[in-house]
Image (cartoon, rainbow, N blue to C red; front, side, top):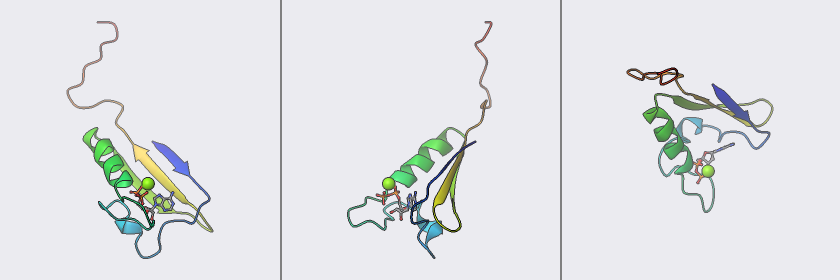
Length: 78
Ligand SMILES: Nc1ncnc2c1ncn2[C@@H]1O[C@H](COP(=O)(O)OP(=O)(O)O)[C@@H](O)[C@H]1O
Ligand SMILES: [Mg+2]
């Protein structure tokens, strides 16, 4: 697991569940695609991506990836 925390404005209140939705943005010129694509890529590798609001400010993002995927064979020593 990797986590990244910042000291910014924190997740948008009442809408924290929506930040991973396609086209959801709180920015004037945002695309709302960054988190959607990030989650999609991570999940396609068997991982998870989520966020949590920090007190009194900021947000943390967490991502997990499996060390081994099913069917994967080690090439080390072969
Ligand atoms: N580090 C962060 N702190 C607070 N809110 C965030 C953070 N990263 C993303 N968000 C929220 O999630 C929304 C969607 O982010 P993202 O998918 O990257 O699209 P965009 O950056 O184009 O808005 C942002 O508009 C913002 O509301
Ligand atoms: Mg972004």
